[in-house]
Length: 378
Image (cartoon, rainbow, N blue to C red; front, side, top):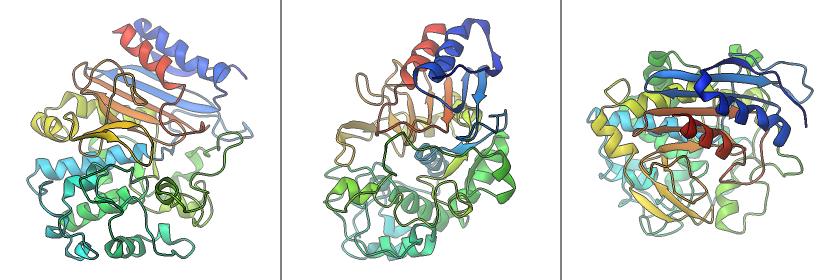
């Protein structure tokens, strides 16, 4: 346990948020992290501190970024919602209307919304994959085209931990022509002037923090493929060329798992979504795609109740994903602890990114004190 000297800015009335963030170093062995909160378009908290590596030789700086794992899914969901908003994507149409080859192995009736709500029955891939296959887009698209559903689509929910990115990303590519990473770069990151990448250029490596595994935890997905959870999560690690800190991982496009950003970029994206008005999405699209419940079931992979809109997680009172008091709050977290969300009722955009992962899936112990402090400061 160690203290930290925080950098950045914090409005005086949000001092409790600063205190909660600072306490992560003494209470939760934080190494390096950034936290940003935007309320009604005004940045009220923009803080960072600690170090970008295990040796604590590289300070975490204002422009430091890190892999946010599944927090990437929320940004991919925003990209899909933009296509809905533009009239290019209808989530009630079968996937094969946009991606004909998808219809193999009994998948002709799966709708686009089933991909976004993790109800498609495609949480894993049964065929044997060669080393490095998960970094090869075309290989994984072919594998998913051949894959049969693991349950009746629409009748159950199971977290598509890695496959979500290929499934949603390929829909985006088939409609728009750009990859999901290119779409996010051109239509979200550049217009908002934020650091968020799906497919990280090598030029950004010097400012990228190393992800540090949770003490004593096995790498994500290292398990036998004997149940649904390990089939879904098992795509994440064992077959990768290198590690999540490798150039190969960073360069690939995995819209479910390898987005790179910081607290400021997540908060800015979710602030734009919280306010509506067309900067990214119309207010109507935010209501239809992001802040309205489309599925609520016990997730067979995660093992607990999850409320989902189209690609986003909705805050659940008393649940693993409780992000403030408002049930229309939507966002996505990432393995190890990163989190971004939008609260359209309070007009909050929240972003937290760190490099020291915590164990387990679901609620991270660092979230609640920071989130409670935000709402207590309004």
